[in-house]
Length: 395
Image 1 (cartoon, one colour):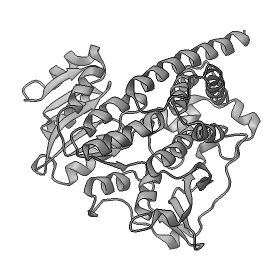
Image 2 (image 1 turned 30 degrees about the vertical axis):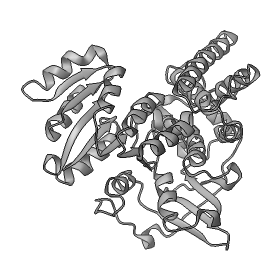
Image 3 (image 1 turned 180 degrees about the vertical axis):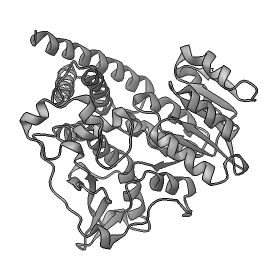
């Protein structure tokens, strides 16, 4: 029986993974080693009961009593805290979904790779902050990393059987989010409630806001470089409002291969779950006649400066990805809290990168976990100071 773990089980990716596992036979077909979540204890316990999970972990230490009460009468071991999540990753599993949001997903993913199984990577921050370390760890232990972002899964599928040396261009698509046609003046007044309302995808609060600002696409640009090894000048972003084409590969003979699919993350998750075969996935089948038209346009760098910052990170490499992500997470926290305007998030990230670059802090290669975690801490501290300065200047 195949063993699985789901890190970030109660988020949108985790829920979709759980749905596919249950449709595929649940505990009769899979041995569930570990499930982790955060504050949604009721849902985490429901999943653990449904899958007979060996371990259930909440990231919140204060919610451990609630988790134990919810799982009373079962054989599931309950634990709490970041250390417990990492320890859960030390339990061998054939297939691990890495869907914890943010830099917090890096360490569990690295530890899961040591078992030599398959890591289904939905935590894009792992590649952004420590791409060389993650890929080297997989190679060392003979593990497989499969991308679960819809764009990178599309690139992976389009490259199957192709000579990567024949690739000229990799084009990942962006929906443009809810503010694609907003003026600069309108974007200055965007609220967190507006930014959460994505037109195509059903996602959590933070990733929805990242999508609206295109910071999510910025992370995916960096991911494309780190996972596939393409040079920055080969990687493009195109705005595609329908979110039907997820990526395109342009070859040296002028041909372009596109991957199309519904805006449903279960496709990419199901591909990773069944790989190297293809299994049945219960997603909507495209009706091209009903779609009628697919539209594409260039992203506006003025309204979405995150893409420009991502290209700077791809050029700098080193620990710049860790700094970029940490500053982005701090800026996002303060936007949600009402301390920063929407467009100011990118300025915080840019200023953080500039200060750390002047300190010569970004040049170290992202090959040691200690260096990555130190940069994550340093960038968060720097970004927090920049936000405080910005708030003070407005008063």
